[in-house]
Image (cartoon, rainbow, N blue to C red; front, side, top):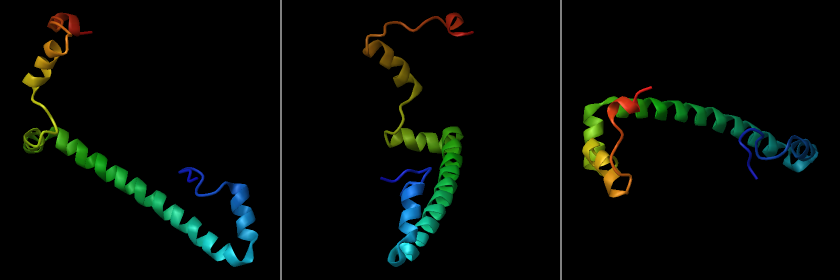
Length: 97
């Protein structure tokens, strides 16, 4: 099983497989590919976070997501409390720290 921290194989298993002559080269390539995948994964995560941050602050993006059904308006959010049986919302001064 693949473990993100450890790679495809445990260190002991990797050492054993590297000692097998006919698969030493593919094992080395797998190790290199695993390092590249971790590097690319980190890059992808950082870029997705940057895009998400923009989308959560941009009026155009928010409107587009609401129109697509990915988000609901604030009015719908507040109305959901009563529809789900939560009753009335607390008074504003009770919601503050």
